[in-house]
Amino acid sequence: MFPTPNSIISSTKPFSYAFSVSAIVTSNQETIVLDKPATTTTFDFTAYMLRKADTVNKALDAAIAMKEPEKIYEAMRYSLLAGGKRVRPLLCIAACELVGGDEETALAAACAVEMIHTMSLIHDDLPCMDNDDLRRGKPTNHKAFGEDVAVLAGDALLAFAFEHIAVSTKGVSPTRVVRAIAELAKSVGSEGLVAGQIVDTHSEGLSNVGLERLEYIHLHKTAALLEAAVVLGGIMGGGNDDEVENLRLFARSIGLLFQVVDDILDVTKSSEQLGKTAGKDLVADKVTYPKLLGIEKSKEFARKLNQDALQYLAGFDEDKAAPLVALANFIANRQS
Image 1 (spheres, rainbow, N blue to C red):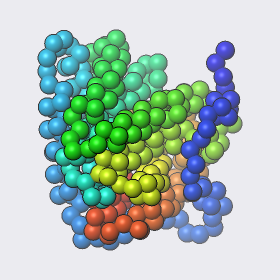
Image 2: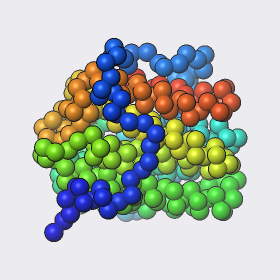
Image 3: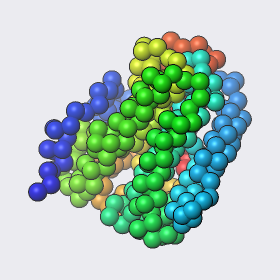
Image 4: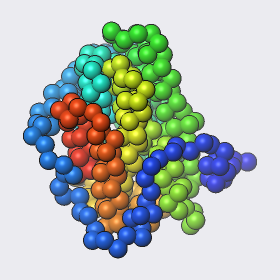
């Protein structure tokens, strides 16, 4: 018999985090609406994001070129190159640059994180999971290629991600590469993404899902891979232990922030605006932040997470931290 969500949580060591939604639930202050960035900067984030995303897209295209067997590579490329904001690889590169590395140093890790993220989307969309038909404005992978090919395409992306880091990373010591691979593996396995997914799927339709379990789900299912992206950048860039730990805490905050905003968008935007099926959590009777807190309190919680995240960057050089500050604000204020 499969364990209940409560037993799953109690048998898995949860992530520790320094923020709590309880302050938002009990707050009597005026609601903070996410319509302006938390900080003001002259950093040209749009140019930075477009430039880095273009570099990542070209690297992904080159990494997974068409070859035999064509069907599996076609399916892998279909989802991997379907667009998207490339938030995770950008976070990886920005973290690497913050601690003294450069784009080339982080590029293999950045691409690997995006491959794993794409795998998670392919598998998450399957009928046995979220059963979704639309992703990034296109039919989901299993709709385009069939469930069998979609499962194999996701598996192939997962395996190749680790191969890519091991083979294609340049200018980084073997010790740091192994450390990065271990970090990424942990983030996607039974202590990370998989843990969040299993608790999520076995919480659907339950009436007793509270904030503690909801935060567990999203700290693992969503935040874990975002955290890995930032930490991998810090490791590859040569960051010391204190720098990597501050980057980890920053990433954990924005990882949960990403999901809170995602929950808000799911009930406030259309499928056309999102590029994926809107309102699917409501249909599946999933617990979300708006469902537990309401829209306005969810926005207030998101703003607090954004502010918490930025505090962890306070000890870094302001100019070098500008991309991560901008990315945090972008996540907080995104509209799709």
